[in-house]
Length: 219
Length: 156
Image (cartoon, rainbow over all chains, first blue to last red; front, side):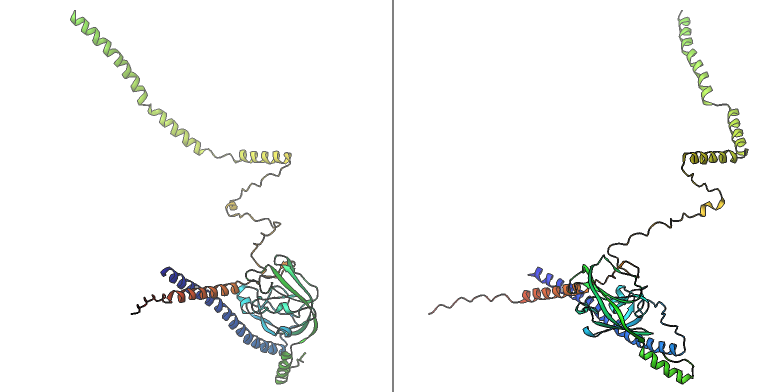
């Protein structure tokens, strides 16, 4: 009887510890996404001011620091509206979808790669199919994308390619409901349908131009 | 007669001892003049300058032999900064292959998709499972044992 009690206590302690650790990781990720969202709003405001002062040059964007918010990703079909963080490290992916460093930013020339965990931000990514639309917003551009290809590849397969035009690539682990290290990757490729300057930037830049009598006209 | 015999015996005993003593003295004590000669020879050897020309000639001969044989001669470092020279790696050598578990952390043409595998769901489920099983063991252990059945009173 004593042995049974001891095993029970050990299991309760170990189980509570593991569950608490995993739960705290999820909670930290949620808090990080919340922080990123408020920081993103501040960045959008600052970018609008910079645009009003004509300091921003074109759509070129300097490489941000790891973990910094770089874009906003909206996928209406799966009710996803998350802030994309720079980097695909464990910490960055815990806070939100991660932008692969060195790849293009959404709206820029080249392949913009965004990845996320299948048990968090991209848990419904498998519901997307060819033709569905995605919206991205950076500090300079807002782009609406249409998915043109959907494929599942082995995790060791070369899935990231350099592209000539504007391309958005979303990746996550596959199968979605797999427990443990998933053997495959889901790769969605999208091309732009519509590109326009960020609305917030336009409005704020106009306000600033009026206030300062600057000769900068909003895009 | 007795005296003659005793003298003869004494002569036989003393004669080999005297000759042996002469041999021992020559072996134990070397002449001091030999030590001085050795020291002088060493001093003269140190004073003589090294013949660097002889060594250079030998190296040139080695390079010449190697060139004739078709193999490049190894570079001979002769300057004083030789100790600080660090061998550089060949730039044409391909980078070390990445380990299987390492995911892509930077964009490259032909790279694998970033590692988005997460152990959190498995850990969470395992923890909850262990918690439930442990709780069940504790609850089952605390249940009182079935009460002993009282013997029925005999009907009077």
